Amino acid sequence: DTAVSQTPKYLVTQMGNDKSIKCEQNLGHDTMYWYKQDSKKFLKIMFSYNNKELIINETVPNRFSPKSPDKAHLNLHINSLELGDSAVYFCASSQEGKLFFGSGTQLSVL
Amino acid sequence: GESVGLHLPTLSVQEGDNSIINCAYSNSASDYFIWYKQESGKGPQFIIDIRSNMDKRQGQRVTVLLNKTVKHLSLQIAATQPGDSAVYFCAERKGGSEKLVFGKGTKLTVNP
Image 1: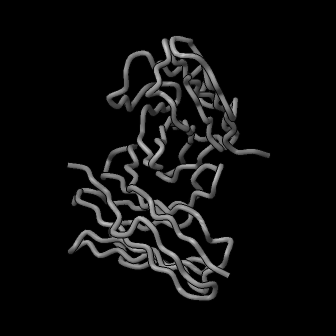
Image 2: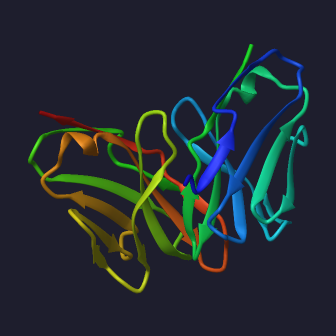
């Protein structure tokens, strides 16, 4: 009964490719997020959606495009991947400010 | 600006000792604070939270202390166990915002 699940867990790809990461939550939360964790473990928010509407869009290149088909799903599509995109990407959902994270997608761009 | 940082990037303790992990924040408008634990290969897990109208909150073996005067947050873990080994993050949220800003993390190692 995984609360926040994201796929794939590992993603290895070449520079210039386009890839997607999927996220689903079964907690009934209205708000979902994407966070990026770099090699130094620093966690930075990228996007937040509330009931399918974008509410937070940090300074993220427009190669990153989140899509929320319904409030239980928030997918992340990345175009023209660059070496610097290599990181662990975490999806999360929230209830009263408390975030529940998925297990992460480790993206390696070669 | 928004900034949440930690005094110590690593902490090593003996099993059974108490651990204290510290965090400094700079946004005086923050009204909600959370501690997360991240084990290797996993996502951050909620440990305990505290609102700015409190200065102490206790959970099972954990206590969070909030000192708004000096903008300091700490996590105390009693009788630390090997399973407590992880990276610990503090995070803050400004009142009225959905954005949770994370600190840099402290790696706790518990020696048997």
